[in-house]
Length: 609
Image (cartoon, rainbow, N blue to C red; front, side, top):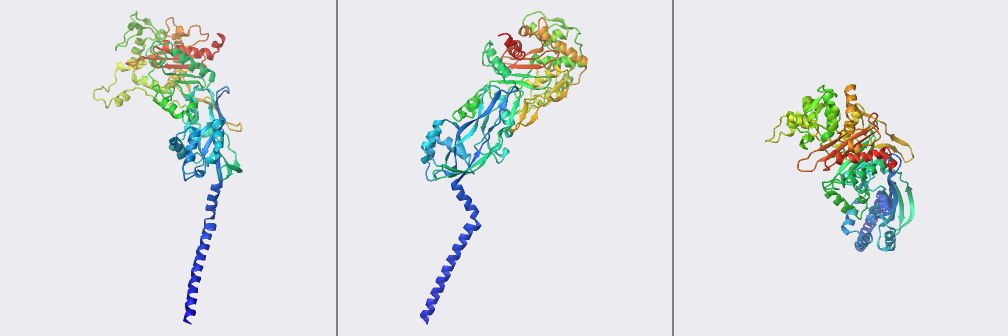
């Protein structure tokens, strides 16, 4: 009996053990297959399924006549799915580095961009040559997790042309990744400046997806699903590519003829239609090659070289650089003189050569006779400092600042182009008091001598070339300023026009009709006066023209040369503004460039061939 009870007890214990084990196994199976079944199914699919993003063709950027400036072309891209790499060694990475001519650091940096998405492809190198594709396929057994994808890549057909307008692309930053949202990945290229950045999300289109089943070598064996990408929008610019090319070539050719350090000068050319605000040319020199900034074989070295270049090639000198206007400011002073009743356009003034506070005419500095009795026409034509210094001082800084503000100085013009515009400043009593408040040895008071310098364009001015051009557009239009535009049309992938630019009045400068009429006449003086500062350069031009040369003196270096003008003078359809940094006088440095642009605009360069 005792033995039977012992046997029963042992059997019972064994039964309990078996029952517990069975319950554990059943529970584990329930947990794995029912409770966590979907999770592990997804992991299993992750081992045999690969989802590749299909990038859409980025939208084209074309000029106003339909000439393609930027487009996308199909090319091979080498991508890596991190989850498909061998975890036990990095031999496949070394092979990939050799095939792609990359360092291990560069490859690891690229792989880091895909962190957090182990079963999504990470772009390693774009636009690879066919021989590279062949080399990868020949080493397929040693390169698990490596894919060859066909993707669109950016192609800049015009090289440096209008590079500050079209912009360039680069690897997305952490800040941009957060801003743009979930459809972007760390290895994506995004617009970094110009139109490429300003309209990034419209140009990019919508991402598609390709789901494929892979074998043990991570080679696709079956397409499971395809979601086609949607191409980006196409953008038509107001820019005229031919005129842009003429302007850039004219600038580079002309600076080679300058006497001071020829060929080293930087600067900008802006051409716009004052009656619509459309920008026909925006050229900032030097430019850069956008395609070199997406070519992985030279991107880092090229970007580094541009960043270290003292000429600052990335800097848009039309919208970001701040200049003193020199004598191109005198028409603004003339407007204030007329409208404030200081002097009439036909009133005579005795230009003895030296103003009340010591400003001298250029003829005095050159050892020539003073201008003598002159009216506003002669004063602007011959660029008399004495005339504008004395009469500008009578206007006073308070009223002069008011007119500067009315013409748009001290504030961005509203042009939609990244990285945005500099505001500049309008000198005033308040500004000087604040600006000089921390300078113990500086006088914070405003003096008439300060006003004289402002009146001739040699004072505390800070303005962009586009602001100066807009002020001249106000004179050309007798008070009306149109908002500057650089995008003419945006077209959806199906051809639907979602945006078409229309002339938009930015603001109006209120002055009497008599003032505008008088100013319109005197604005032609630098070209038609017998001693006009632009007469020689503009000689033989068949259309009436208004304009002004300017020289901004910079202590310790060669002066900046400027020219701003428009034609035809009575009904202006084109306005040209040029600045040549360290180019010397405006009549010799800037006006010849403007003349070539005007000749090209009116077809005179073709007629002369």
